[in-house]
Amino acid sequence: MRLALLLIIIGLVIFGPQLWTRRVFAQYNNPRPDYPGTGGELARHLLDRFDMNHIKVEMTELGDHYDAESRAVRLTPDKFSGKSLTALTVAAHEVGHAIQDHTGYQPLTERARLVRIAQGAEKLGAWVMMGIPIATTLAKTPTAGMLVMLAGMATMGISTLVHFFTLPVEWDASFRRALPVLQQGNYLSAEDMRGARRILTAAALTYLAASLGSLLNLWRWIGFLRR
Image (cartoon, rainbow, N blue to C red; front, side, top):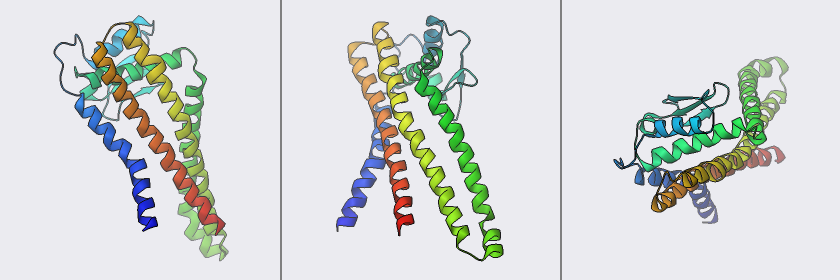
């Protein structure tokens, strides 16, 4: 009974924020003819306003994000071409990342470095795991199994660090960059500002859930190694 309750709590912590975020995004995704522009147009306007004309605004199918290497704000079609509160808020959030990059916000740089390390660790781990059957046959020792666990631990550990670096970076882009810009520029009404805050809070909770999920996976690996 306790195990079932624990699993339910873990499920709510990890998957609950994702479901709530989808609901909040959908709630504010209705077209608003009273808005003068789309999410893509707002992004372009804000970038120009802050003297970041060199940064592109592009449409993508790979999720809303800011690409620091290509210097591009990328929005999914519903955000790029949409005139909804969700579209405008998400566009402002991604511009917030561009502002971070433009002003030399160090945590953004550190996160990008960790992501590259994590990608390298994942590739290394995959190569190690593919070589395990050969190593097991040749060595005839449990060393191969230990290599698998070490590769998994390395990947999980770096992924956990990435997630924990991501949360404050996302929070800064949302609540220290995007919201003040929207409020000070009078781009949204007071009621819409409350909705924008809900959207950004919901999105932040998904990053928190991802951090907790990554930490849980790491804890499971550590528990397995201690047996």
